Amino acid sequence: MNERFIKHATFVVERTYAASPERVYQAWSDPIAKSKWFSKPEIFDFQVGGREYSNGGPPGGPIFTFNASYQELIPEQRIVYTYTLDSNGTRISVSITSVELIKVDGGTKLIFTEQGAFFDGHDTPEEREHGTNILLDTLGKVLDEEE
Image (cartoon, rainbow, N blue to C red; front, side, top):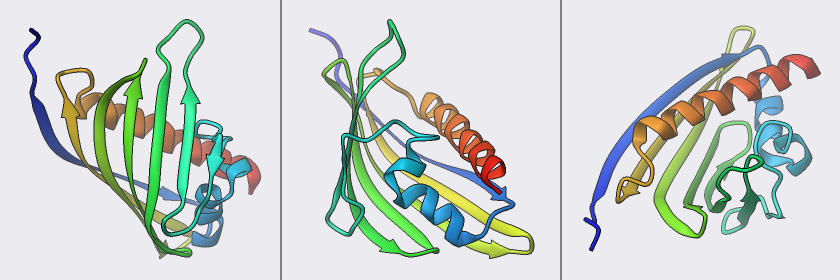
């Protein structure tokens, strides 16, 4: 039998974008806008109690299933959601994530905080943080292109 364990971790990633909080919030809250920097959702119900679901991955790579539930939404200020992440049908983590949007001179400071339970070594907090950095960099490029 394989060893079973949970690794708990919290990480924070910050970015400052040259876009208004309204524009950054829209990049999260609109399924077409979000699919430009995140996976294309199969279900997208952006409201408290609503759900976001996507299933896919790179060619020849693992299939990831992202299944989120929105817990708190304050337009242009805050997005809080819980989610599970599966890889090829195996649950690899459960997380709570908060996205804070703070108006600053010339744009928006985004503070992304994730608290996760990572299962049995299938994923690590370090890998998740690395992936989050890539996603938020991609979001920045999309925002720059649309300004």
